[in-house]
Length: 259
View 1: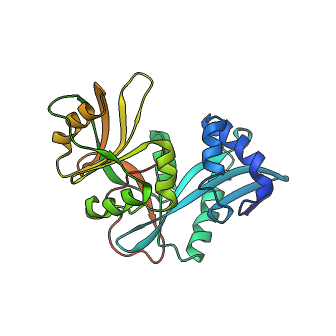
View 2: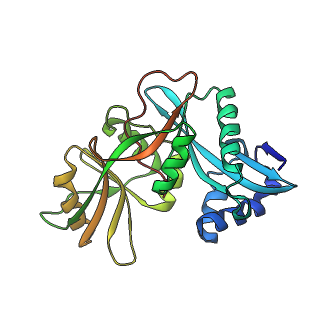
View 3: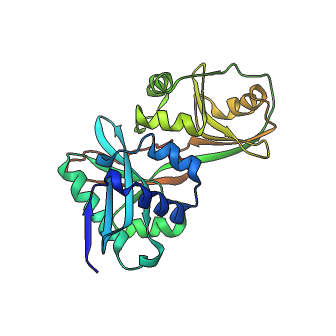
């Protein structure tokens, strides 16, 4: 199977959208958000087989301890070609491309146990453990207010745990289209309300998340919520591959996966 790896082009957009739909099942609303927002050809790689875009991935810029990271996102291959090494080839090409661009490390969030095993075979190691808290509303309401992506990023720098991955700019602008961003005293929250009324917090950064979570639900008038929080004894949330220039331990916390 002959395959060409290259950056995406504007003319690839229809094929990229169909590939995403096949791989992840997202609808046009989400695809519009992504391809009209953070998508950039220079932050993508595609696999072309017999003239057709058959694999793709994208990345967001991030950093940790002053070192540059690429958060790989939307890794997909056409169903008809799965199991033939196309994804492994795309990942190897991307690794070489990012190394040449001077990126220090690569990070991704596998969506299943089988994908954790797949990426482990490519050299990635689990990292960034998290905890998930399922709580009920209780206590007095906690003062919160919506904040802009820029303000969220400014506050986030002060609340990230040691070794936390810094995500700003296009990352937070995209996240703001997926969830509401809130700030409070020594607290940040990125959350959406599910159809059943449950609050789903993709990130809660707080000096005392156990005490804050029930009160947040009171403020936002939700009876129940699920909160993702940094927790060193939790389950690995992400996987990391250091490139040649990386120094020191892997990232310790990664919060915003756009899932």
